[in-house]
Image (cartoon, rainbow, N blue to C red; front, side, top):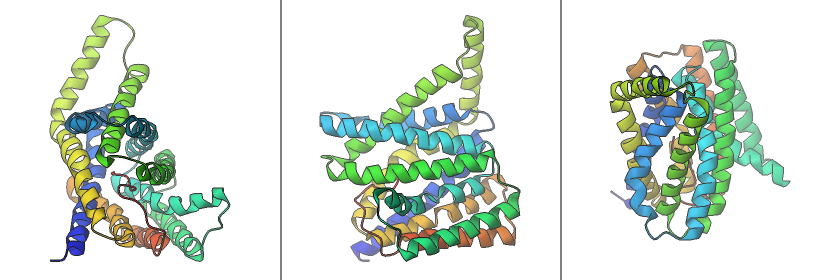
Length: 301
């Protein structure tokens, strides 16, 4: 088996694992708030990747902190949206981040290529079919679209900062640690009771019970889907082309819909799958013959 084929297979595994994160996080919303889902997932991943912060270059730490702050807001939109809509619908809308990236080039005065207009038409048609299938556009969908826009901006910033990084894993570890730190602030500001010690004790007791009930999902998201899969992603992108990686990642929402069915029992009608196919087609077209991206320029879900 050639190294290129091994790289593609690695990215296939990455895509499948990313697809499981949507139903996994959706399942956790039954007992945990979005703030605690983000905090538990990224705190565990940050602990695992902490050795990469040892003797790190200050420039890598600074870039990682900046990117981590943006990544935190990506997950705020994504997880808040998951609490208000199905995991498969959230995944397809969030997957539009690969289309957002080339559209952001318009802000720099570069007109979109014809493939971008074709991709946009396919994506809008797919969104219309999904909404026709699963109900009118709602707040959860708007939050998911916000996640796609923020992820797209994050990817563009990653393109800049990864070029100057001394150690890519240090950049990644610092991002994850920053997300965890921001999630701590999120919990303290928005959720921690201020009435008194009994209320605070009761609050943490309920959180501990919810974390215990959802421990399997939290460990899976933190260890497998965040810490371990990033390493495999980096290796896979090193041994495959940018187009190959983009095409593989475009199938992540389909993987999310597949696992959403077996994990949560979520289903889509034939019309919904037509919309999903149009969305995926738009994602692939938007990336075909696109400019190469550096390693790690695509965000883990």
